[in-house]
Length: 97
Image (cartoon, rainbow, N blue to C red; front, side, top):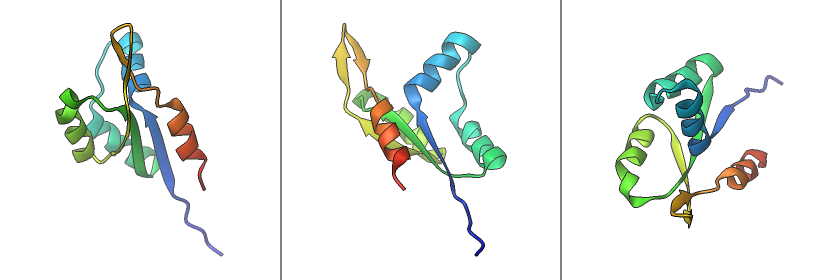
């Protein structure tokens, strides 16, 4: 039997963005990133786990238009900073068959 494997990407938006800004000093073009995931790794479905903050609705629309499926997490505030804590949700979804 010839099985077709489906490649899925699970991305923690906050960790990706903060890591790139801190270490590479640049902002990611998510539209080009989605194309790269498809071309390089044949990613059929790409999920971005992200905290839901209403003022970022334009960002969410851009990510969806770029080909990502968004998985929202309620945000809590610690010391005045938003915290989505998407790690456990990402792991649980990735572990599902």
